[in-house]
Length: 110
Image (cartoon, rainbow, N blue to C red; front, side, top):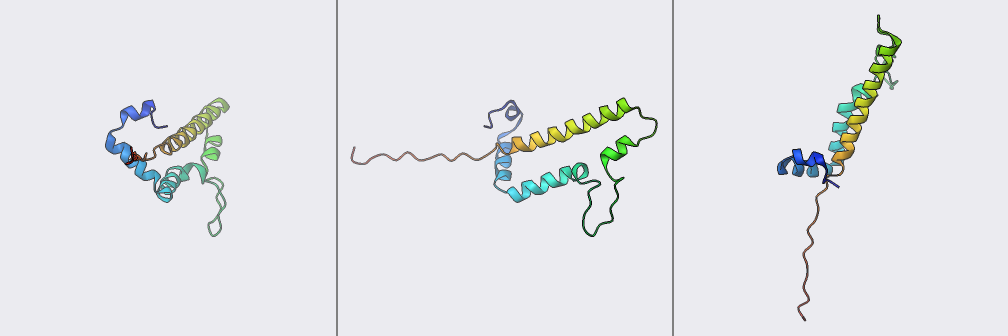
């Protein structure tokens, strides 16, 4: 349901655009991929692309110099929270669907 606190910050035009975006699942998926590719695809082996496990945010955090284990954990948790927040935002977008107003038909015999 789109009656959330977040809707209060959106204009009618913005709500309409989010509803329109939901009618284009391929576009929504493309946007999602672009926003998450740097987080979720780094260090992943892919056909035709030279594998580089160091191109990965988690490895970069874990191997940073002069960083304590506590700092590595804090940074990893912060990145995980960021990923979760992005996913929750995409889930929120899915709630914006156009509602059809059904025409009430009257019985002409009445």
